[in-house]
Length: 216
Image (cartoon, rainbow, N blue to C red):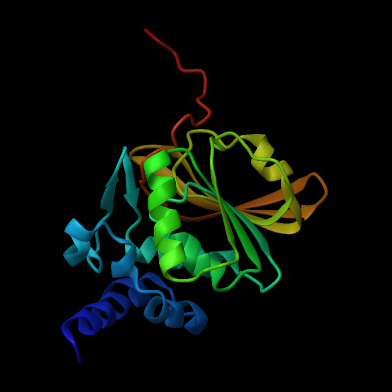
């Protein structure tokens, strides 16, 4: 087995499976979509490590196990319309695109928008629309799935209101060191159920909605 493929195998077996990612469709994706090809070239040797990888501009790629766990939790279907807030390198976008019908991904940083565009084009992924813009507090349209790739202290209601019936929203909510990954499901028009999946810490979305904070 080549060194790169051995590292990918180790990532799946030692990081991802032990974190309760057991969906074979998701595990197969990790072999199909080559993570190292979405990492900044200078950091490519870190592609399979259990660490975040800096993309600059205060943005990092999630740890591999977080990416896999989020994709598994979303229970993506072939006709799903997905909204992703924060394209980053385009890797999570690419994973989602393989299981969903169409992905709209909005990135505020021009350089990252261009990086994701280049990476997705190189992989001939054609069911993604990349938009440069600020979607930290909501985006127009109705979606089956919404994913926020940065944390938010408060979740704007606009995101929940953009979910179709049975739609799912994955968001990491809170302030470090106590953030919770949550799955919010639209169970009926205007009614939502929230499930806490696990604790983690990721960088906040730029321009995220802020709560009123007491200043002493």
